[in-house]
Image (cartoon, rainbow, N blue to C red; front, side, top):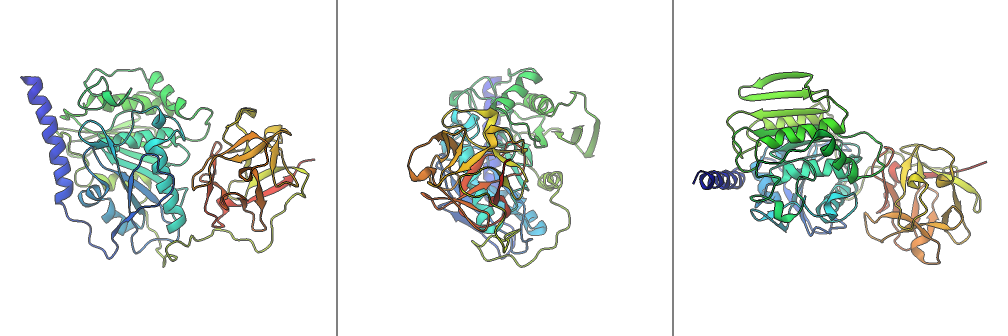
Length: 461
């Protein structure tokens, strides 16, 4: 009977949370929530809504705000404070709507094998596409992208930081679980070992799961803020400690906090360096974020600082950060060159000098090794190792760029353009890097001329 009452209390908390979101009023502003139906690669079949404040800088930050199970993007927009903070501080908010059935209805996929590896498919790839849309259509700053969410959305927040550590700069997870807590869909609430109160792994085990999501990644890991109510019976409060153990291990931190305090009554905070913060909300059930918590998350992201909003560019016209009037230095056809990103000053690189078909290329510190030596041929191919070619795995926005055995198809042919872009003959889209960090993967995206799409070919001696 006690177990039944606890389960019903958890369901009641969940329903109260969802209903509360719908009952609240949207922020007062001339701007409005807009649905985007064609935002790019969408293997999760998700819906996207976006809120773009009227007053914003030329290159605003991007916050992805995710709802709980049974909710929706518009519901989280109406029932949370992120859009009103967006009006104040000038950042874009993306509100994804999950479409996967699990637990209490439609939830974000944090259980499938596809979702647990970078570029594997399902919801994480759909969310990545939404971020790219905000960047290209609204001039969003790809170096200031953040994730937050409640319950299932809090779970996906930790998930995205593990799978795309070079895209997201920080996250704030409300009532979430550690990355890879769920073995499969059957483990999702209300059943399964993740949320039945028995989950207990070592910090090393938790950290290894994150590192396995993106093998070979050596760049910085995003800081994270973790929130949980001590009376949460749906997603057990004990999972806050499991998340702390995971992310302190990922950041190479001690399990002993560097400071503890109570910033507000009933908010007990532990800090582990500057990378991990954990909030235990005394007496709270499955009902976060409550009033004022979204602002603390935005402060953690550094988005509460004064900005100087300017008149934004017309929708669909990104503001180039550098549009050279003269062509960048380019090696002549037939020569072997490094391909160096203008924004990052790093080279297009084949990870670990792999020669396997389908290996995705990335940015990495230039080192003049054979896995960074490219030859532009008379047939417009970019060859590496003499027999492998730069290859587009698809033609749409977000398509992977990889190496593959050379053939004569147009997905291996590239135009070296005078403005520094490299565009695919098949797709007409440009090589694009969403980050300047080592390990940032190269993709195809609509050409817009910003420096993350500009490269120069520097001849190797």
